[in-house]
Image (cartoon, rainbow, N blue to C red; front, side):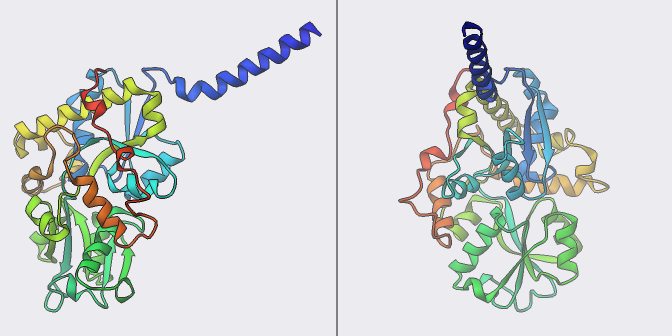
Length: 336
């Protein structure tokens, strides 16, 4: 009987340790971060932090992976396949409305950095979002931040969702092809695709969310966007690693503020700009003002994002959302 009790005790301890294992991840264990389109300038801090060696300086073993649409990256996070996502902050609010607790621990952009483009073919009659009726608008993916923003811009212009169509076309080359083929008449995308399409003359700017003034005019406030977000449970169980990640990204944000677009471009992979390095530099110059200086959440930003999502998502209402659980600056000030 004594032996059987020892067997039962050993089995119980084994089960307990197995359950605790994910929370007791070693300090030097690999951290996988999924980026919602790693070559987009809005997500540049991810690759730049790696290139500058800031992850290694913090003693972190970080692997960056790319996923074209942020909504797919968040699914990887919820499934536990990755520890963090570089994507738009608005997903933390959307996911909380679905019972998932996700928080941004470093914020890269105080504005979306997105641009609603209109094809040159359609520009004669499609001069503002008020003309979107009957149009097909491109987004990276359904459930993505580009969908959230597109719907809000149309709604604010008085265009009901039934009066236009959304088509998921991804980003980069697939977005360009969709507009050239007239499968979409307008669409939301980021740099360097924006500068590329303006240079070729295939598109014109309809709504510019790359600057604070443009975002204030279109949305009514700052819209914190690109950020590093993790599951709240993971952050609470890995406070040291979370602080080291936040510190690494904060150093990168400071680097961006103190270096030129030309200097930064020298650190990115060659395939980010291909055969037109000058175009990439110009696109980066146009984007630099959108970045935060310290990785912290801009004041009033979460409230603006909640307002945008609440405009067309019935489950996303202020009474249902605790914004304090969707972001934290604590890891930026914590000693790792």
